[in-house]
Image (cartoon, rainbow, N blue to C red):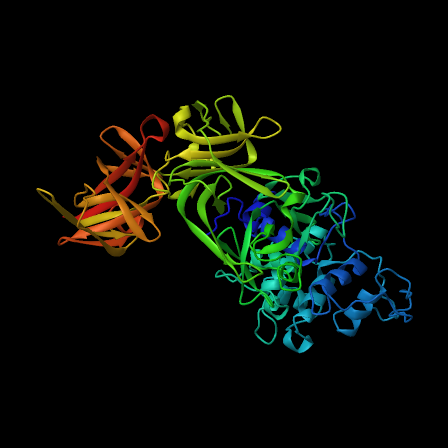
Amino acid sequence: MKRFISALLIFGMIFGLVPIIANAAGTNYTAAYQTVKATGIMVGDESGNMNLNANVTRAEFAKMMVAASIYKDTIGEGSNISPFKDVKYTHWAAEYIKTAANAGWFIGFTDGTFRPGNNITIEEAATASIRLLGYTASDLSGSFPYAQLAKFSSLGLKDGISKERGQLITREDCMYLFYNLLTAQTKSGQVYGQTLGYTLNASGEIDYSALVKKNMKGPYVTENASLSLPFAGNMEVYRNGTVSSLNEIMPYDVYYYNSGMRTVWAFSNKVTGTFTNAAPSKTNPSSVTVAGTNYTLGTSSAAYKLSAMGEFAYGDTVTLLLGMDGSVADVISPDKLNATEYGVVISTGSTSYTDNLGLTQTSKSATVICADGIERTYNVTSTYEVGDLLKAVWTNGKLTVSKTSDKGISGKVNDAGTKIGNYALADDVQMIDVTESGIYTVVYPQRLKGASFTSSAFRYYELDENDKIAKIIFDDVTGDAYSYGVVTNAVEVSAGFNISSSYQYIIGGKAGAYQSNTSMLGAEAGPARFAVKNGAVTQIKNLEQITISSIEGTKAVGNGESVTIWGDVQVYIYDNKTYSQTNMSAVLGNDDYTVRGYVDNFGPSLGKLVRVIIAEKK
């Protein structure tokens, strides 16, 4: 299993750069702005400036219409035919105007001109837009321009636009118009955006994340930290999921770009280890096993390098360059990189593979979870145990693994969640929390606000070149790696040398059982915390009960204290000795229930957190 701290959150990352603004009509400014950029309908000037206050010429509007149509990819280098007598074939918009005219969206003026430099009025834009949706004069009631403006408004195309008859429209008006157009109904009853191949979300809006991916190019690899892009100047750059710059992109990063959005996403996820298998065959591989973990091959280049015709054989040490979805974008020899990784052992075993001579090679292995949230399996010569902190050093393609000592700091996390003590957290800080049994979770800075730590809370931390904390491995400080639920029945027997136990439980609404003839977990019936590893419960700890007199937002209030409710709090109704999972809204303000909260208590570090709420039928 692989987990990535910097999983791509496209919607949140992009929308986070533009303020959420709703105009008088309630149209979302951010959604409109980003959608027309992502589709390439409006791309801005050479510097990426959208110039939303500027008026729009008829030629510019024709180009936008083509970009919002099935003809968006058919415009050629030009022709030797002038579509109108005042639009020479050398005019920059000649092909767009010709396409718009041939499609029937524009018909020009009675004197045979198009007047490409004239600023376009709301009624001209309305007429062209409804024609694009397939409506004709026979579908309108009334005379020009009132009939056209009425249809324009009834289709929702005017949402967000305040201009009236005779007024010129701006680029901002066009932004709203084309955003509305994508979800408007065509004459045949289809959603227009779907006719262009765009998908809709559950709310009937253009699915933004799918839209970004549809127009995203990549993956590509930076061999010398330089990128090959079809645009320059102002752009938005992300690296490992955080705002960055081109200067921070490193050699052998994997990157993607969207020209319409003038945005670049780069990732530095790499895995180095022994190449032991290719499936379904080395002749035509679609996935590989490296360092004991399976990876999907995401490009033909990566597949070729690891195939029977490529440069890497079973038993070779390779470095996989992973793309945004965790698939392999490329493969390089590790002697191109020198790296040091720290991780906590979560399992041990052995690895084996068949080398090129047909001989089976076997060695000890240790699987560790590193601060970047990736599990790595190393071939080792020494014996390690779950919970050991290991240091793995790659130097010129050779691996050295050794046990190392914990390394921690002390200090309080500020209210913004950006510093621990005297050290600032890097923008792309990587943090995980690992328990003694080897289960773990990714930690985000917001989770730590206001907490105070001693060095014993850490297994490892690392500073970057700016003396900011870049990586942290916590020692079971959040409790978030555990599962939470209810022990419904507990039986423990200790008679002389005979020890046995059985527990029935519900976790996340699903029933399960634990039974042992050699041990007891020391749990009683009631809400509890469970250590679950590889699908099996290994530890159970009952939770502390608190009184809840009211719930105010994310706080449970009672007996003079206010305790934060976990975002994934488990809520159960207890009725007739039976637990059934429900949600907060079902029990809040319901006088039929007595509500109790159950907390994990992490003392001075992170305090109490309500993990389970039981609503008992009165």
